[in-house]
Length: 221
Ligand SMILES: *Cc1c(COP(=O)(O)O)cnc(C)c1O
Image (tube, rainbow, N blue to C red; front, side):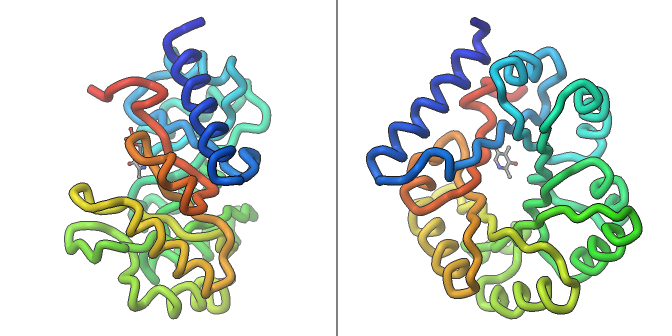
């Protein structure tokens, strides 16, 4: 087995163990392997091990490696987990299957327009800035309910759920619990939360999509 196979198997085992502990079905947790900065030679052992959900944070980088892999791989699901500029929306809609970073009205409008134009319906997670950090993307929690309603009713987007990136120096659990509460009162069942350092905590708080990079692919350069 390659290093990546082994690491992936370990992450899967940790997911299963955590699910057992908290009484959840592991099938309810989608592992997104975050392959940003890693080339096809590091992605291919993960594909060989059956991994089909991958996450990327830059459009240009994803455009450079995924179309070729996709042409040779069935059931691939590509998740955009990084910020999306409105001038890259057309490219993103063509390239990705799920958007985790819907974070403003202008982007919602553009996504709706572009999905209609390309006849592609991507599911979207709305990013919530749970820590209200000025430098971080995401909808302010006090505006979340209103934005979720608009995403559904005004822009008619397929809103799957909510996503957050907790502040680095705070307890992630508090933010996961907060995100879950916002989702619950808006009848949203999917939660994109948890990374290499805290995916087990995220699972305990109901994560349905965990975004794991370094625990699978090793440290990024
Ligand atoms: C890079 C990244 C991840 C993965 O981070 P690791 O700590 O390597 O698991 C998850 N989510 C987002 C939004 C990222 O940019």
